[in-house]
Amino acid sequence: MILTSTLSINYILPLSQTPVAHLDRLRHKHLSPRGNICQTIRHITPHKATGVNADSTDSFIDLVYANIPQVNDDLQYIFNQIYINNIPPPIKHFFSDVYLFCLHKDPTDAFKLRPQGIPTAMRRIIARHVAQYFKPKFAGYLLPYNFAVGIPQGSATVINAIQFGIEKYISNNEQQGLPPTRAAVFLDLSNMFNNISRVEFLDIISASFPELIPLIQLFYDSPGAVHYKLNIVKWATLFMEEGSTQGCPLSPILASL
Image 1 (cartoon, rainbow, N blue to C red):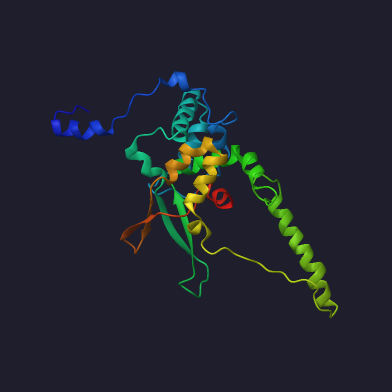
Image 2: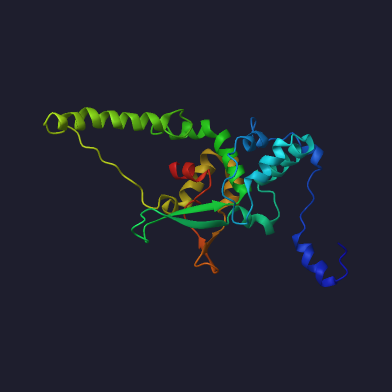
């Protein structure tokens, strides 16, 4: 495209970025010592929901499975730049915007809804990658209270232990006409993702996971736009200033931290 208008040139110039090193110099700099983004993409389940800009992880899956070395190197380079927050400002909102829809929890009550947030495909990919390759460090930080992050079959162990306790101390006694000797109390955090403090988890990231500061700042430095549908044709937007983003693979870890 040839720009013949001074107005057009003045519009484009602010979008340009300081040149980065040639791609060949950065091909082999991975996200972490073990981080290969293409391996992460290969393990993503296909045909998942598209993001706020109608983007899909399927496009990236198809690119990786094409097994073209140049393409894989280019993908590694692109996600490296995302990881270090070295991307043009006009596209940074793609890593904080979310598309929100709701599922009905109770078919008899239209007001009981379960919100589901869907970030862009690129955010889901980089967040999944970081969650995977920093899993041992997250797990170590969360000890001794951690039974989920980085613990093989950790959640299943907790569930089985609870079920065993209920059977032993409650169900068996009731079957014999005896009173239970234990009580089971189940707690659910209401709206957990929206209520956690960004200041708190940013402080934790800064102190214990400084290598993640650029990426977390990309996600949370400014309020994220949440796009939701009011009716069949009308959309609206609100801005999320607190909490972590639903649908992002890193959000449960940030909430745990």
